Image (cartoon, rainbow, N blue to C red; front, side, top):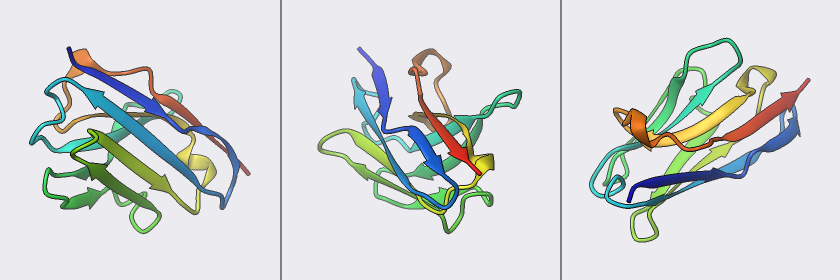
Length: 115
């Protein structure tokens, strides 16, 4: 059974940091590229970072140089380190396969950045 569970969000001041973690169960993690997505109020969900099975990464321009994605294939976890946070980073953050499998969205974790 596939399940994605995100954690680590919170309220932080602009310029602060957070570390998000996603734990996967089932086959969704194996060999696949995984990604972190976010959805801000009133906006569409967007992919902000992705990482391949072997660790190659790609970032959205809006987070490049500030966010770092990593994964542990043995533990089936994918993390997102968020540094130099800005108010516009406020969103619910989700992990999923890239491209996403819509039936497996988790609850996400809320990140709120105050100015």
